[in-house]
Structure formats: C-alpha cells, structure tokens
Image 1 (spheres, rainbow, N blue to C red):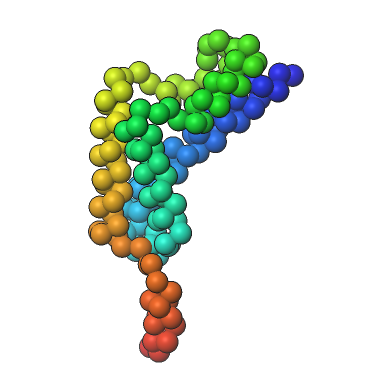
Image 2 (image 1 turned 180 degrees about the vertical axis):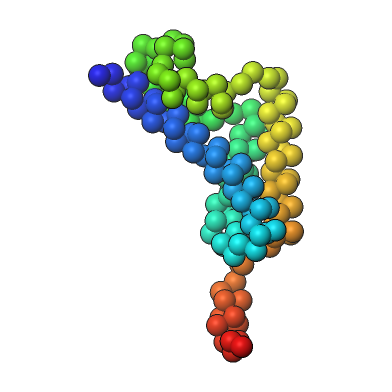
Length: 143
C-alpha cells in the first residue's frame, strides 16, 4: 500500500469538504433564512464561513496557490503519481469536480463575487452576535 497516495486522497477529501462547506454554507444560509432555520444565524458558524471565503479570496488576490492543493500535489509526487487518471474512482471524480481549467482572473472574479454575496448575507440574514439577545429571549414569558 502506498501511504503517500492514501494521504493525498485524504487531503483531496478534506479539500472537497472545505468547498462543500463554503458553497453549501451559503446555500444553507439563504434557504435557512427563507425556511426560518434558527441555526443559520449562529455566530460561530457564520464567522467560520466568512473567514473561510475571506481566506480563499485573499489567496487568489495575492496570487497564492491553495495550501491543500500544494500539500496534495507534494504527496502525489511522493507516491510517484504524475497524473490524476492513475487514481482511483473517488479521487478521479473529486479532482474533476474541484479542479477545472480557466484563466486565473476567472477564479479571482468568481471567488470575489461569491465573498461579496456571503458578506451581503450578513446584512440580509444577520447572525446572532451577542449573548444578550439570547438572554432577552429567555426572559420573555412564553405565551
């Protein structure tokens, strides 16, 4: 068993999870606001979500590559793998899903617009930032 290859696949799965969190998180916020889901205003969730997309946008504006991509590529080299086609089914399709070809400005623009939408949700669906709001809800008599 090639442990470098296995670790590279694990990094790829984590990378895909980050993408699902960022994109799915925005969808959850929008759908949750319309459906009345209270958890979408959770400040920890919203802060982590905002920090994740801010980090991604910062990388693209600085022209830096993603550390997860670099780490995975390093592990693939350690496994003596030169192409993704040599990988298993899951790795192949995850790569096809998250690594696509386009000029770098397309990614920078896309990530920036996505981050602006995430920022807009902070006003449209404001998170619960203070514990005083929770205390006030607890003190309100139930009818």
